[in-house]
Image (cartoon, rainbow, N blue to C red; front, side, top):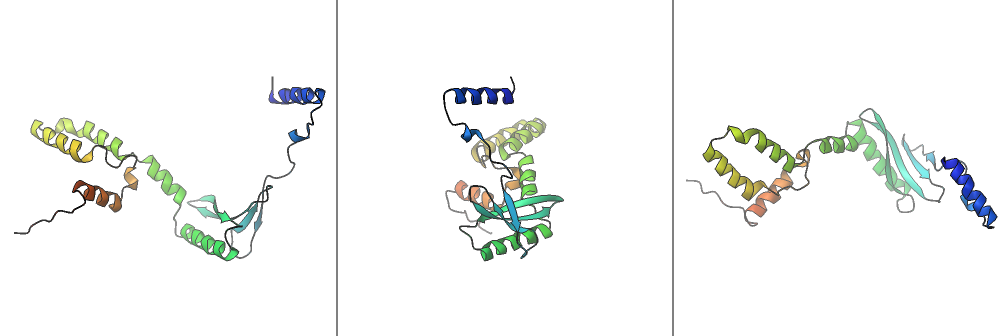
Length: 177
């Protein structure tokens, strides 16, 4: 049976029991429409059949046309949305694309996967004493750190927090002799 034949069977059964089948009728026309505002190229309001209106900006990023939802028109003024749209367009013009950045970050391995791969690849080349020392360091300082964080996502903030936690919140002083 196809979806169309099943739909017809349901409609006939509902008609036999006297149920109103008008609720099965799908609305005709587009699900949404967009009104482009002449203020900024690519800035507009998207109108949904439910009555919801949202500000959007559409621009080319990294060679692809991207549509960015700014926010609901019921919350933002046109001026606020326009300022945000200008910033999005400026980011696109200088080559920044958050979607491409997210894709690049997610294609990199997570820290724990990288650590496992590194250990598997390089630890066989170490002397027994080096392996024992490094295994202790790994267990004590590196295992279960940066959970779910991708390598490309690691930044100074992550490392600073890890280092502070490592020292019990107190950064140790190095004495210069």
